[in-house]
Length: 355
Image (tube, rainbow, N blue to C red; front, top):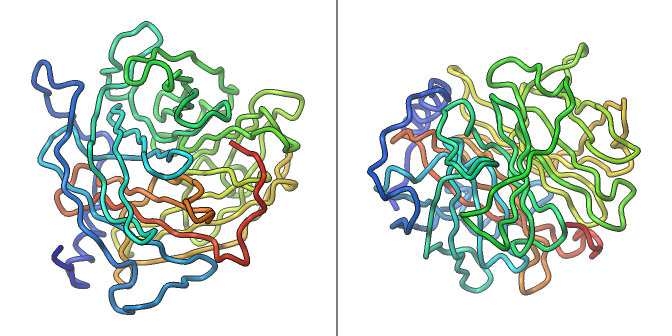
């Protein structure tokens, strides 16, 4: 895969900043809404100027790929989950598409994806979600502890709502149930709305509670609003914002700590990505929680793009892996990247039942 130099990456960053999330969606040929997608993937180095380096801040590199396709249904992926062993992924796009693929490894390193398929998300009535403002899927998470064999949560921005799909049973044909949102979660300004969702599993203080985070819906102190939905602990809280980063996704670790994926870009700065960790015990109604930085990366020194989806799984060797996918905004200057990291062996979170 051809490497991009600093000036190419600067152009890429400007393209990200100028990309409009409300750009018109192209027309799709009849009969092509569901089916296979031909994809190509090639390896990328996370730090092309530092060959051989594996440790980055508190995480270790476990391989990455750039994925491309000529299919106009491909791209825009903003939410991600991985099967328990990492051999399969499911993603959602901000134009209302499911995307599934098999994931291949060599020497326990991510090397490619294949057997890709796609389909439109369905509304509760069974019809395709076709309205641009109604299908902006931004977050994806497991619901019932059964992984890809169970139910999936999908968070949608612009017309804020959370949909619950029995994906394990019906796959692409699943018709969702709607989970009510707090009134305040629907009051954000355009492009600052609901962005990330998850559900705490058994064995945690917040078991059964849904956590939802906005992208950049700020409270009076300039921090990012979030909500706990369901159960006795329901209510709003905030995540302390710093360095102009916005939230793009979350994933819940064994034991209940929450990882948040953040991004930063503008017309005058190169793209940045950050992963932070929120202690489970700090997440309470009315609280403003801070978060520990696990990884921070910026262009052009690191191979990142508009990183929007975050998922976790256990590798066959027992490592807790983090997978991150980028939203290419359907922009030819941007890329769909899938990157993987792991906690170092001596820092792996305790093995506890979570999602």
